[in-house]
Image (cartoon, rainbow, N blue to C red; front, side, top):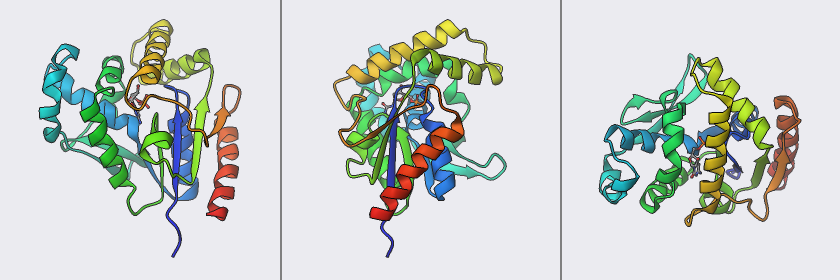
Length: 228
Ligand code: DC
């Protein structure tokens, strides 16, 4: 029987890792799972309950009320995230969620539930999953680990262009500040901080096109899949 393959793609906020992970999954015929979307969905749930950082003590008791799943949208050709049965794929990308997601994702009970779910999603499938701790914590034995980087200005420009294309009004300065804040919180938190796994391959895509970064990653994936 063919061995199940797991590919972990980690990196800083808006470095293009979701684009790369999605492109790789499509090319290889694997499932793509956006772990950041899961932390964003939990954040949206808490925002709707008016739970802010000061009320974090209440969060563990609420975790059982949060149900997350991914469903394939045949019209948009993408996996979309559902929070308690509602599609929140676009809503969770807005700046208010981005502004709160880092403190929510630093909470132990939140991470435990998300990591358990992420492992169960990949149980009997070939997957490409992107996030911050996929190669270090979620799948330390992944067949291939990629760590994506790009300069903060390149990342802020890409994110700003993406939000502007959706007609969401936000300045470049605000986007850059949000990215810098999240980089800092994500990489200094006590539990599962963002860091490059010792056996991850780094791809700096600051000057690469989408096709070029996919070609580099496909080359790595083909070698690893052959070996395993
Ligand atoms: O990938 P993203 O920017 O959509 O992720 C949103 C936030 O979720 C990010 O700032 C940190 C958190 N996150 C995390 O802590 N662990 C992951 N595996 C993925 C995301």
